Length: 468
Image (cartoon, rainbow, N blue to C red; front, side, top):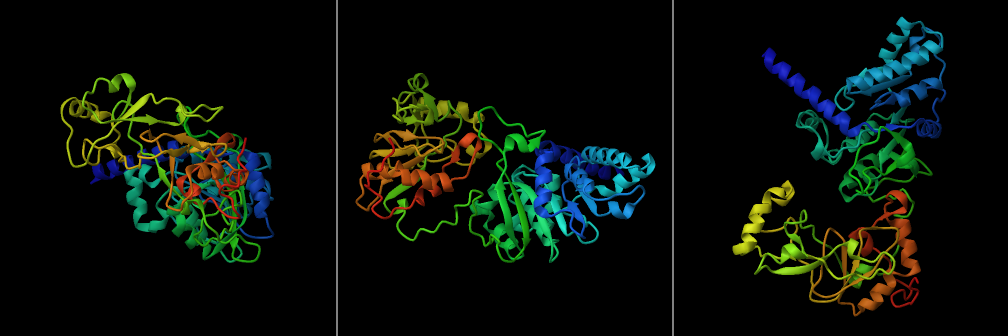
């Protein structure tokens, strides 16, 4: 039994280390101070809790704002922090000790005081004692699927299903659940929970008790230190916002399940037709890593008998003219009902081990996402990430890949020329700029759902206000 307990403890320690390595994204002091100002800390009364205190940025800033005479542990009790990672707890305590000694505390009492402020514990399962009028901090952001299994087993029984998509969702839900009638919550979060369809239940549940009194984007380059690592040239992993939640009242942005934009535009109301009424918008398939279903020209020539489609990605588009170049890649098209033979079979089987796990769940000869686009007609390719809408003409028979957007004329009698003109109009560009989620450096996250919602009204289609 002792050996089993030791193994369990070791597994949990390793899991907490892994969680900390993935989520150690600490908030810079100017952001902390600005958020405490917006929350009104310190008010005349009330205590403050940081549910994921890390190395103590919020704790130290909160303590600096209140009087903590030497030896006054009751004064210190107004500020409390919880953190799972023992090294981070020690770092927070060291910073608090330094603050207290600078205020005249002796070293022994300063250490006791720091231990009384910064607790090693799990905010989601432990029970911080007392009422906290203020909750402030920067909760961890990590998708549920990426959590160590030990922590999933710990948290699954206590978390509602709507709070399991990301660890941030669990901290948001728990923070609101302990908020008193006069409470205020100020958090730095990633923006996705505000508008993703999968967080509708989370927004609706939070909205039964609280509304948003302040919401603004933050600059990821200056808001954090010890940032998460990410692959070179990949999309940024964190798009931060500061949000202040208060009990329901006047002048609140309601949380009722509908998406909310940090840029203030998701609540635009358009009663008329939208682009989805005159065009079909689909997502181009992801076929897996290069060299398996998506081949260069030379490799494609080595597969006689393969059903090959010319394929294009956003890097095939001239950045100045937005004209599509000649395809240099080819996609292998296979059928669910017939295993390939010969060279195609040998190639796919030999390359299968390079396919990520989610690409190996079905028939071995099918790509991760099936090729279902109607390639029998010309279309428009819209790159998924850009500073504006780009509408690139795509000839019939050419396959876009890697989640670029594919737009074809619908059954409403509108031509592809008219649809292209509307996509490139000043009106549409302005609407997309207001409604698209922001990425770094002025780039927009342009999704199929966003394109489908582009308003069409007042003769917009064919109005000729195309951008030069």
